[in-house]
Image 1 (tube, helix red, strand yellow):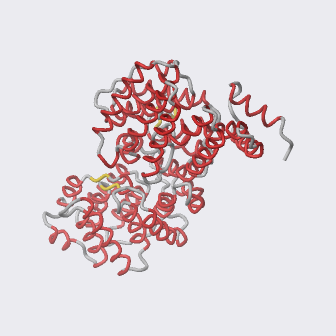
Image 2 (cartoon, rainbow, N blue to C red):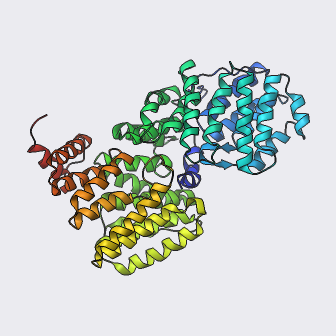
Image 3 (tube, rainbow, N blue to C red):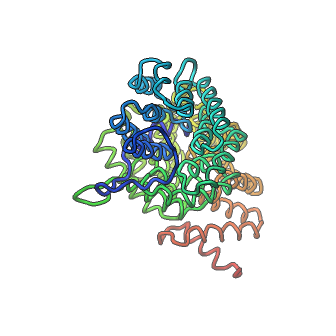
Length: 527
């Protein structure tokens, strides 16, 4: 589902690279990729590869096409353009566009191979021919990874081959996180990063390999470096936060995405923030973790205006997710965001599911059970319409609403059982990156519910487990502090309150929760 969210929302981020001063060369990192091209075409080619490593695909394609115009027989310029049509981490591939681009070099595979003047360049071209050859995407991805492995074995000193082999491994399981394969990719990318600390792909792929709470510390050095390696790639600025979120580093998360979201220049107003899209979603979540609901609310309102004005489905899809986050994180169950009418035309079922979950969750909290029933029916339909390998998150959302219905009816055991089923669904899914896809983590809701029904010690244990999955999540920390207090675990309560006080040190003033945390910390002994 994270991949689905990428597919829906990243278009609003990646279609617009960072604006640059006229004639200024883009600052994208440093690589060595010798070819047989003319000097002018080589410069454009290297620029394309640099953009490619930072997943700035439209800009990369433009650079490769400029290289083609400068040197029409330059085979690797067509290889590069073809590579912009495969997005391994997101499980996306435009095979038709890639094949069409390759045919501009020559009409057949053999004829294209004949245009590559060296064995090494033919090996790169052969690998991309395999990627876009016959067979299913999964089979072609596997064959491509094997071709890149052979290339790295034949040209042991070719750092670029190693970088692209690492990326091929990241997409080997169709975008899902397969830990052993990700560790292999991380090790290979790490070798490239050690050999060239200014290599954008090396830093980028290390981050992707390790962006889960268990392995994130292995990617911290690359995360701290990547933004300065490629300051003119918006995705590079955002990508660092994959590690920061996994480690609960909210100041760094917010800083990275504030830069990434400020990616277009308006001649009248200067820099303009893109307030919908992938970067804005992470920024909104980061603001909440910092205790800055006002900043999050302002960002969402900007997104609402952008989405309404542009009338673009991708912006409205982004707004749907941000609306659900705004409701759950702010706990404003009857506010203007809840009542917001949203045009669902052309929205994917998952975006609709987010809209219905936000509406239903708020309705359950205020006791509007008619609205909850309508949301449950809609979530059931959305889950059925979602591909089988991605429908887990709508199912989790539906079970959470079912649990709230049971709890309100006094069926405490049924509520707990329903939430445990929701937790089991989430536990069956690959550990993912970034803010919770299901908006309200089911184990967090289970912990809160157990405390509410007088089983605080059990609730505390569930919240500890949730904190391991989402380090530094503010709502989990606050619920844990309350659960530990209710269960008589003074030491754990003190630790949770202190952690949250540090996290909210620059929080917006006012609010009952901030006051609760500061009161709790004020009476604790100094440490």
